[in-house]
Length: 298
Image 1 (tube, rainbow, N blue to C red):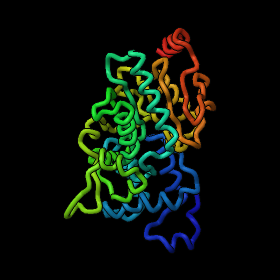
Image 2 (image 1 turned 60 degrees about the vertical axis):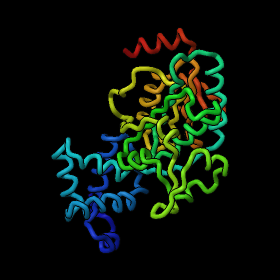
Image 3 (image 1 turned 90 degrees about the horizontal axis):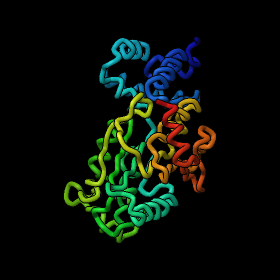
Image 4 (image 1 turned 30 degrees about the vertical axis):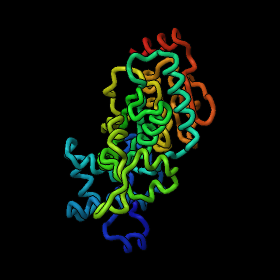
């Protein structure tokens, strides 16, 4: 394929051809399921260009050749991290959190759980979403030790490190209610002035793990009562979406909730889900039908 426009090349530090872009699209799709449109050309050049500088490499072709030659190298994670978009905030899409609180108290009142109520945040990013989940659970049960277990995963190891630390610029929480701030955050002082940290009691509710949703096997044994998968599916094509949703369904209990982002519609990729409203889904099948569904997949 031809190179990009001559003027574009002259303005760039590295030669970046259409072939390079197509290779990157193919590699990230196979590795992480991310479907890049041609509109992402400049973003790809900028982000992978940083990897070339970090490795003191002179061309995209050389970088991609080495990447493909060393399938098990750590650079694959750096490559994936570079192309992962992480846009998040505390209590983003706020309407979901009262629904979560109501669902948690309902499960507790039904006394169905001798074990903790299990919640999975499948795109943890820098941690704002799982911490919002944990704070909601604390408020729902009026306790810093609510009966929940929260698993938070992401493909990007860099953002998981930030999430695990739980430290943020203070302006990230400026819209939060003052009483919530005092209860769940600590303000930094001296060299940490301008920062806040999520209190340890809240951090302890969450277990952060790296996970690629395209992995053949997910390291989960039991079902989840709530699964957050918000603003993730927009990066996948429909066949990939369908595979992931089907795997979510196998991990949902009969009364579980699956929460999507505001621009996502899971009904187009699975006929096993029922929309409750406000991008909240439950299983359409009854227990017997679901058992048959799962048996057919084994």
